[in-house]
Length: 273
Ligand code: DDQ
Ligand code: CA
Image 1 (cartoon, rainbow, N blue to C red):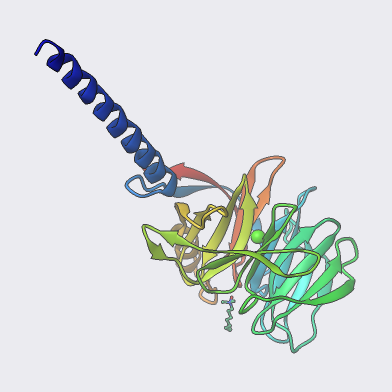
Image 2: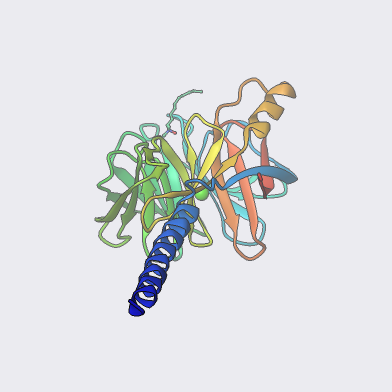
């Protein structure tokens, strides 16, 4: 009977260790996936720049030198442009055929890749003179957003699927369903690859989802209603939804704008406690 207390003690210690290891694993999973620990961010505007109010922004990216590339939609008004950040002026402009509606845009190597709405057709342009180099067909259900990590293309088609596409063959390498707390997040639109995450505008909302491209989990939400509401309050009635995220990786600057918005904003995130 002398041995019993020691055995019980060891048994309890082992149980405790198992419980601890399970709960810490679950805890880190919850933290990582945002469940129980929602990573919500509001924004602070640190700079405002002019933006062409006729640009129905569907794709936006920043490369360097205070220069943005932008893809615009609407039939007859679709374009790819190189835009000076400070003036909002297009320094180079490539009008698209009237039958195409420009959508997501990204720079892969020295070439700009663009997808179009309601057609599985994409275009490749020279980044310097915006001349059209090639066309391609992709396998997404539609062409909405486009971004890259320098290895694959990330694509969205208005569903909850985040696609990974081979930039040479345009085959789908991987598909992840984007979810937050177990719920599918649909209407993923304009994309940006930022510090290992894929950020996506959710169409018709003032929200950006920060997505893990490893499992599709939403890691956090950025809430930006103040931008659209501020423009409306200032009398800009013709504006459409928030759309367009660009990332200056050298200076860690985040830019956002919207369809037919007269302004483009540089923002910083503020975690909501
Ligand atoms: N998409 O951005 C959701 C992919 C496409 C939106 C197309 C909306 C066309 C509406 C035209 C409104 C004219 C001001
Ligand atoms: Ca973008």
